[in-house]
Length: 137
Image (cartoon, rainbow, N blue to C red):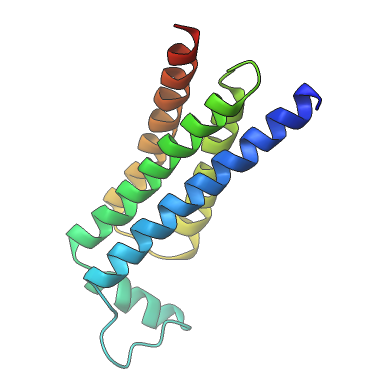
């Protein structure tokens, strides 16, 4: 199998891990909070009302899920990369970062949640670096 194919597979595996982590955290957050009865999430007004009622702790679970997903996905992608290079891990991190931006732009969030846009690349870079260093040593 060529090195390029193995790198692409490493990115895909890291992305699958990242999606699994986000899904798990979304599930936990969903168990912690549900929209008020009668909230219509299909309208912008209903979505704003629902977001305004989410407790800070629940929002923190979402943000921690995004950050943990970046770290886990980047770590896995880097470890599975044939040369243990950080690029596959950083690609997974970038994909998650873009998905988070799209989420933040499409659903109104409190301003502090936007801090995830700093935490996600930091977590992904640190995890990719750790995975590359660990394999080199």
